[in-house]
Image (cartoon, rainbow, N blue to C red; front, side, top):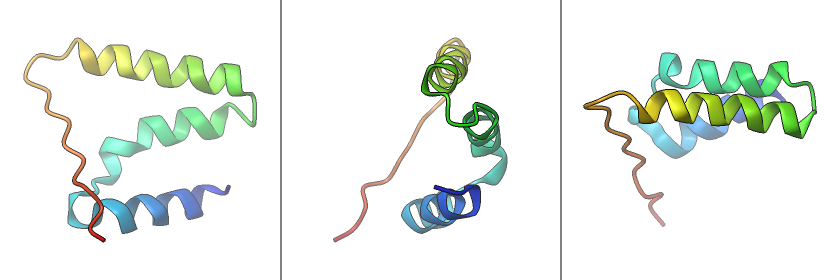
Length: 66
């Protein structure tokens, strides 16, 4: 899956809640892994750990309407 396709899918799903700067680190980590699932998973886990440690952080992903 290409980066533009992923970005478009995220935008379609999140609609007005999509903020590029919120997703850029995760997308960059995945794309930089160049198909290596272990590297991608490690990068995403590092981002999740960093997000978890931020007090006051709210993660809100709206349900996809049917």
